[in-house]
Length: 151
Image (cartoon, rainbow, N blue to C red; front, side, top):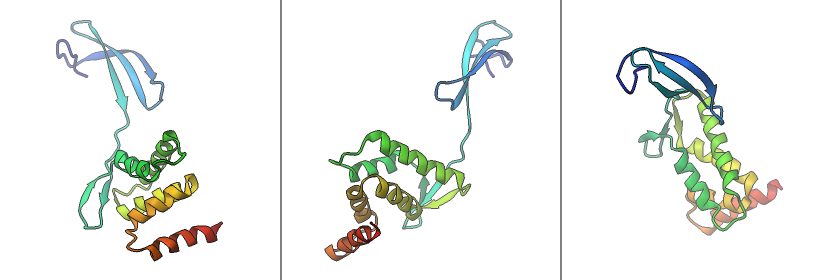
């Protein structure tokens, strides 16, 4: 680890502890040349997942984009932000744990709809109407009837 003060290549670790979230390790280091101390953080390197869209283009998975879509579906509904954030984190973990480097937007949409179905049925239908591109009222009614039949 290069010293930020003198750019010397060698330092020693004085203290090491996990951060409050437990996702990083904080290390206090001391430069072996100038003696100054500095802090570094060690994190797990995640391999980016690519989303294959309907038009076959690819882009990096963006959890914030998914969260924004779910927030729009839950607009004016009694759904807490933390609930949606947790759902997005679970979806992201599912995708990361699949060990596939490419995932279709359809798969992400299905995962989001499964989560929304358990969170708020109105938000689920809203999300599904945009995601599945409902073209008329009969498609919308058919989706609502599927939801009612499962109850």
